[in-house]
Amino acid sequence: MDFRPFERQGGYERLRDGLRAYRLISAMWVRSTMAYRASFAMTAFGNFAATALDFAAILLMFSRVDRLGGYSLPEVALLYGVSGVAFGFADLALGSMDRLGRRVRDGTLDTLLVRPVPVLAQVAADRFALRRLGRITQGLLVLGYALAVLDIHWTPLKVLMMPMMLLSGAGIFSAVFVAGGAFQFVAQDASEVQNSFTYGGNTLLQYPPTIFAKDMLRGVTFVLPLAFVNWLPALYVLGRPYPLDLPVWVAFAPPLVAALCCALAGIAWRAGLRAYRSTGS
Amino acid sequence: MGTARLYAAVAGSGFRRYATYRIATAAGVFTNTVFGLILAYLFMALWDSKPHLGGYDQAQALTYVWVSQGLLMVVAMMGGGFEDELIERIRTGDIAIDLYRPADLQMWWLAQDMGRALFHLLGRGVVPLLFGALVFDLALPSDPLTWLAFLVAVALGVVVGFAIRFLVALSAFWLLDGAGVAQLTSIAGIFCSGMLLPLNVFPGALGEVVRALPWSSLIQAPVDVLLGTADPMGTYAVQAAWAVGLLAVGRLVQSVATRRVVVQGG
Image 1 (cartoon, rainbow over the protein chains, first blue to last red):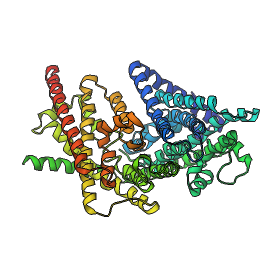
Image 2 (image 1 turned 180 degrees about the vertical axis):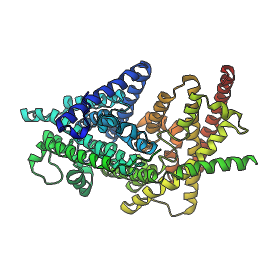
Image 3 (image 1 turned 90 degrees about the vertical axis):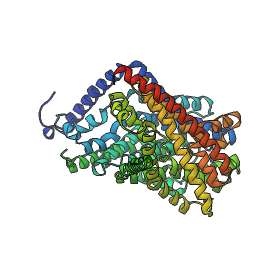
Image 4 (image 1 turned 60 degrees about the vertical axis):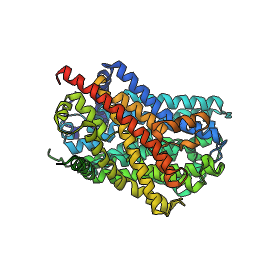
């Protein structure tokens, strides 16, 4: 380990140390979970089943209607699968961020501040929960079903867009997790606000954009750009227009949007950390 | 102190305890409103393509969304509340202290949970419903008696919800870690209470099964009383039967479990 104080390290070194710390801490939590394998299997299955219920509800709806907002079941499954997997990756990597408020309240954040390791890496890796693979598995299954059933005219560009959507989507959701963590430095007791943007955003993206009001669509396109996770790129793959009259090229913007979101979330995080005053308890 | 006054005091402490979390309550109201909005648009799309789905018109379906968002925390659909605390007390052995108290374990926690439910009804139930009523056309009754009938069904729903979670918590006497059971029951609760989708939209035999399970008492039953789509007396009878039955099972399990504690020596 490099014991120079953080402030004198360059950005690259900080990132490298952060990732290394993240890997070590999360590996420790994985080892500790694996000490109780039966319990791990049960909670991973529970995670899978809990997320599968959302899709079960969609199947129940389609047992009563043929189309939802003009979309067929496989089309909805594609939207659901992309959002579910992208969110699942962000949730696996950063899902523990919503505990930050509790750490601020009970003062245990202070112990993280004195360690020569980036705080973000410590908070994010804290209680790293491998059981969250259940959500990713469920999303991949639904995505697989959608791709098997849908009659898409594949082009090389459309094929490349599939991994691009999942990675950029995970990046956008990760930015929301980190920004939510930064918000909790200020409002310590408000982790549910973060949940409405993370879990709520994921729920929103599971349905076709055609069912929502135009103002809501503008909000999740231009303010909190969740529409770039799946709606804009996936509608291009499906060959459907986005309800707001946007140019076609926005379907290729997710990597840029994700990078921008992560940069902004990073700035918000540093501002939150700098504004932090210990409760002293 | 009389028994009734004791439990009233316990309920009061349950209420005050949750009332101290003001920012968390505001954040929760925000979350319920966001999810309410998403569901409201989803239900409008559903009822647009199939009017009178499940016997509701669109205004009734939208009312369902906002009332159920208001009730989620009241009936503690996702678990939480006393359940986690009781599991923790069983795990650490603090439960032995509770058993020495001159109050019945089950009644004590029930009173506490009723206080919590009342706080969540006022703290997290009213605002999302008001928001929904302002933004959408809802089918809210104007007759105060219907609202009163609704509140009775909510109270019975809270007791049924408590009885289920009490049994879940007692499982910790055998399993030590109640997290798995709590998770599986909350999954069953989310699906079978009508939180994701009204139970009368579920097709065929599946619909009949979920409506016959105790979780239908938590959300579906009170909302139907409010919408006037169910007879209050018949609904109460079903809810009360589940409440009494599950509380009795809880009492039986409690006596078996506490005998175990004595055998282990605490």
